[in-house]
Image (tube, rainbow, N blue to C red; front, top):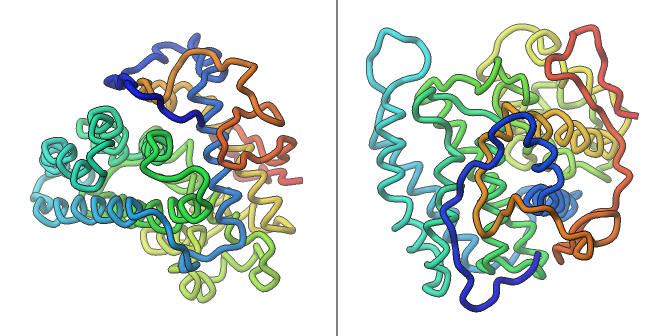
Length: 350
């Protein structure tokens, strides 16, 4: 992740993946390589760590959490309206409009003055991360937009790429608060899953917290993968581990046998180790989310995340860009599933 030089010119992010023919351009782009490296770096940072792990991050971490708290307040100020439709409460459009009007000032209040020039660019990713105001839906594309927002905070230097506590807190403090926020949005406005009932996610809406959440369990000698189907264990650990928080949310919003409403997760629970689950989920995310046109057609590119091809001379070890955030080596093994999993198919995490 190269530091921004003096006089860097920021740009309004825009779409570049217009048709399926553009997928190859995306997979070879600077943005793709940087974001994969970033995702894996944060995955490594939280390995074996609960959400309550003690860290001393940069002050911007707490300031961004406060921005998310302020967005949460906008939800409270914009209650759902009575309407005939069961799903997609139209009050979400009002919430979204209010967020658009306030996001710039919120971020400027959180960032030191020398980063204010970036706000018009990075605010787009934060705004996009809450869902679509027309369809009133939410999915992995919106979640990925928040990962892009986190990346931008490191790229502009508001968070320190060389500071381990910043990388940890990006997940344990900022992303965990984001999860609370989007779940509140989903419930308050009865948001639909983007796509066909969460086809590109492990539950109806999310994927990333399962990746980083499974990393939190790597090396844990007590919590076995099979335990996440036990409701008592789930409730006990949900506040400390993103993976269990996801399962707890599923148990709140869905009824019936777990193996019926969450078949992919049920199959994963039979895997021998959290390490295999974690590696498999990363592989699955690359193949079944980031390589799918319906998801990545909405990715926005600007000066911080570029669609131009990655320069091979900038690639670090294992073919990853030299981001300076401790990128993992290659050789990840795991699952590669079709968009719609046949209940009879068991994910191969070996």
